[in-house]
Length: 273
Image (cartoon, rainbow, N blue to C red; front, side, top):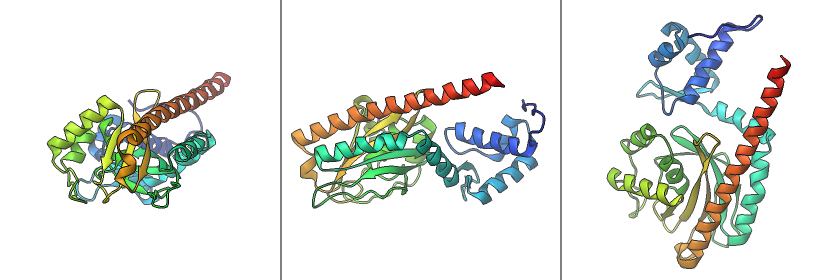
């Protein structure tokens, strides 16, 4: 049921924010009719709101399905909000520590629907090293360790949509069989870490662990990557797995603490109203 607006509120703005909230809460893309039904607003009203949000970059529309998902502008605002909470600033020393301990490139990726974005990175110390560009947006269909870690802990409809879509073969090692990929994702859920050798680029290896928020949603991944498989074998690989898994759990705690601080502030503000 539509929420009654308080005095002096802008009803159109409130409806637009409710549309954004519902798109964000939905596990995958969502259609205008579904939004209209759930928000109990006319389709014409929802359509005008969506067109406005699309034009401003807050919402994307799939050219084929015509369904909607959150746009990059939302992430940009969210990144600023995260920075205000010092989460990225707090994670950066963790990435630096991982890179100094292993010599490999470390990165933090944040989930964004069917994609993910690198929000923090530290380049490796090796002469031959992987390079991760901060702010780059990658599809979950790309066979990276971060994509696999995020996808493994994503809702089932997101997994189905990615695996039933077009899966590109990048190297001779790329796994494109949906059945095999489902088995790989199941193993990642059991192990709590993804390992990729040469599927995205020749000789590029990476390990990633999921980042889970306070309500159990996978919101991203912590990864370590390098350009020679020899550095991701045997005891070296075991150490990288242990460090990645351990620091991902540490980041999980940091994010949950930040969320609790925000909730505390919100409760204090609401109590004063």
